[in-house]
Image (cartoon, rainbow, N blue to C red):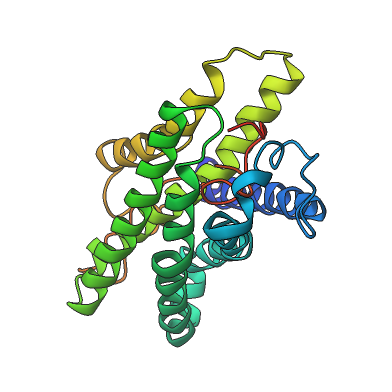
Length: 248
């Protein structure tokens, strides 16, 4: 009985995590009605009209399109079941994901980070997130090319965790709203905490969980090279998707 619970619980938690990611992503996409066409009275676009019609606008709409797509695609690609059952599609979609993040998500997020409304701390956090995300994808792609699949999977899990910072940022903003907590330092701090904390959790899990069990729901890896690891941009329009506070 205890063994059944221990083997089922990771799958249940993974399913709930996917539902949470999907729900938050849909709520972010729903807000796009304020951006197409741009409504400069909306929270996020307020005060941005002076520089919107230029490179910022291009980065903004690129991010709107590529951010949710990369997050949902990443959710699929980190699935062990999908990788084992549809290995050819895993490789094809992995190439699409790498191109999407390297050519669209990260560059647009980095450009938008410079205009973070809450100041230099938020700008540095969002810019660092964009650079870290692109770096993880690049290392992950390189590891796959040289067939270092354990390293590849770890780098792509790091990428996924960084993309999920959009969800974490949104949750932080939502909790702050519910708690009616509006400290000036909260949102700049959130731009760092939303990706550093989950990334630290992922790295800590590698030390706490036996390598063959991490990310695999307790099942041993099928290949000596595939020791999986599991882990968990400014807003829907910041650095990967979205956050609860539109002033960042």
